[in-house]
Amino acid sequence: MALVIKSECIDIKDGVCATVCPVDCIYEGERIFYIHPTECIECGMCESICPVDAIRYDDDPGAEIARFNAISRAVFDDGEGGLREPGGRSRSSPPVNDHPLVRNWPTKSEKENQS
Image (tube, rainbow, N blue to C red; front, side, top):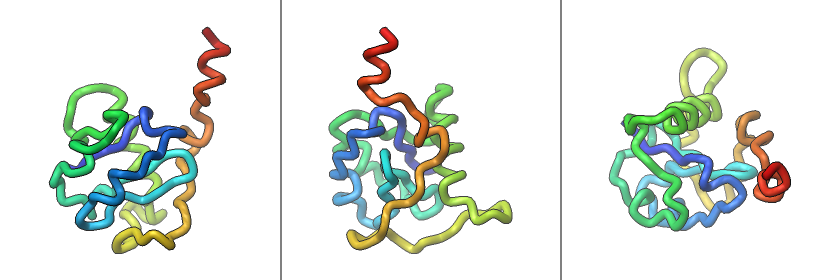
């Protein structure tokens, strides 16, 4: 079990979650942060401090949790069925490439125009 960052973080990227993570398992993407599924020690610090309530445990019920759990795993996929193990994020780390679903997620203004 690990924690997962959901859609509420897209284009917000407050980043306080990454600053409190004791194992630096929260990686910055282009539009969202991603929690590495095996580096996470499940301490819950990030969940408790997230200002947009975007972080949940990956075994919480709901389709969005399942979707973003799969997205996080895909972002760290090593291409051989396993996960890349970057070994912890540093402030100088370049952003990871966003998953295509996140890259194409509607922006807030696009959602407002659809209403």
